[in-house]
Image (cartoon, rainbow, N blue to C red; front, side, top):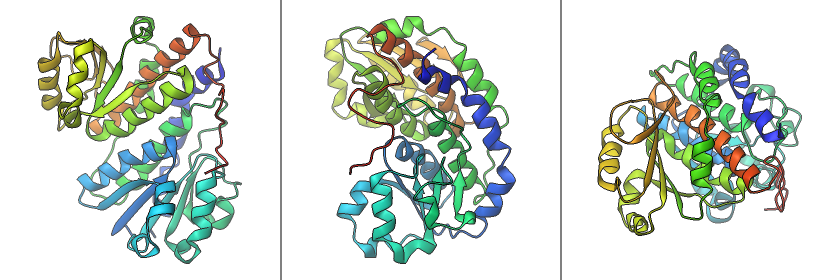
Amino acid sequence: MSKFMKDTLEQPEAVRKLISTSDVVSAKVEGLDFDKVLFTGMGASLHAAEVAASFLRSSGIDAVSAEMSEIISYSSGETIKKYTTIFLISQSGESAELIRFIEDNRNLARRMALITNNGQSSAAKNFPEERVFLLNAGDERSMGATKTFVNSIVLMLMIAASKTTKQIDFSNLPSRMKEALALDVSWLATLLSEKRERILVARGFGIGVGRMARLMFAEVAKMSLIFYTGAAFRHGPVELLIDKPVVLTLNPSGATHDLMKELHSDISGKCDLITLSNSKNGSVETVYVSEGLDEVLASIPMMNVLQKTVEEIAKKRGFDPGAGVYGTKVTTKE
């Protein structure tokens, strides 16, 4: 079994362990000012943050997620000062951009909190314990983020929910993840291994997961997956259907479920179309996952399906799913 698959299969237990720390998380969040919130990180950390930022905005809180490298180079200190809490997300706590951001903004240290899997990291040493939020994901062996990505989503949602009137029921998430990881996806891996365009479309809370899937296909299977948000796909990229691509959609029950079903109806017959959903309605070929989960969590088991799929694709292509060829687990150059 590859390192990537070992990490992937350990995700439900890692989430269960993280959920058990909810009291500690809530206590730490209590002292943070959520008037205007910034989530910032790189790669998988940034994509995970997009889910919590969307959740906070839907709850009436001003929250954004932005790539750390771009903030460093293209945002003024006056702009950053507007945020009352700045969440720095890095599974290693050692990435080049993170260390530079902390150094460049020491005057804002009291507004920062760190989300990391490494409580002994260089970054963690800059903050008191009450402003370091641990992912509790355990050792992650492979280059492609699995446990740290999913636990980042869950931890940031735990943080966000404790500052809103909306409740999130995490209790069934580990079992739904386990169910997703038990599915036979060999047929999907075969389809996506074909030499034609692969397109993934998602909306809402699925956007961060969709962007992470694009990164994962590059890191693990060494192949391109094009990602578009649901509405953006209609604004021009729909022309890609001319070459009969494989189109995947994430479509859990929720605010934009019917809009995505309408998209399915409009593109059906023009591509090989598969949707990942917790709704059995419709005539589109469906991978049924995330039964009973709230929309904000439903995309996580869908990601698990894609993780298992990309593992099989990597092996078909002769790659070790957990190893990089040119990249490394921790990026130390900006």
